[in-house]
Image 1 (cartoon, rainbow, N blue to C red):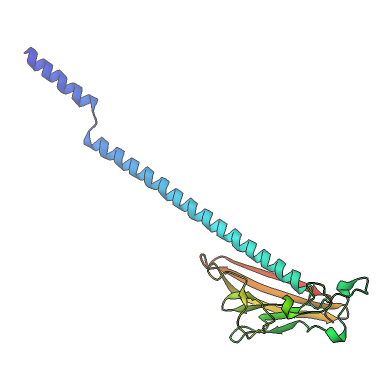
Image 2: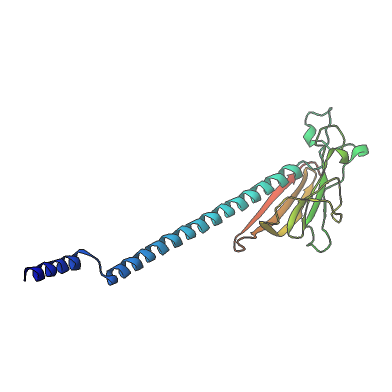
Length: 214
C-alpha cells in the first residue's frame, strides 16, 4: 500500500512539473512567428535604407552635374586680355576669336542634345585644344558625356560623366533663350533615372548666362 502511494505521488509530480507536447508546439510556433517578423522587419529596413542612400546619391550626382555644366558654360568665349580692367567680360580679338557655343546632336539622339564651346582656361590669351580648353557635353546612349580633345558631337572618344551602371539619362538638351549685346542665355534640361529603382527620376532645368557670347 505504501509503495502504491509513493508511485502515485511521483506520477503527480511529473505531470505538473513538465510541459506537454501541445505547449511546446505552441511555444515553437510563437517563436517562429517572432523570428520571422524580426527578420522581415530587418530586411525591409535594409532595403529602405539602401533605396534612400541610392536616391540621395543620384540627387548629389544631379546637383554636381548642374554645377559642372554651369561653371564651364558660363565661361564660354572668354579669352584673357591683359589690357582690360575686366578681362572676363572682354571678347577675344578677331585673330583669336573662339567659336561660338554650338548646339548639335549625335546621330540617333534628340536635337540639341550636344553643346560644345571653348574658353581660355589657363588665361594664356588664346584658346588651345592642346590645353584642354575645348569643352562640351552630349547625350549618348543614355549617358551624358564630356568632350575630350576638341572632338565634334559626331565623333567618339568622349568620356562618361554619368555612370551607366546606376543612372540612365532619359533627357538632355541645351536651348538658347536669347542673345543680345550683353551676351546669351541657355536653358539646360536633363533627367536622371535610377537603374536600380526605375520609379525614381530626378530632373533639372536651369539657365546659364554666357556673357562673352555676342
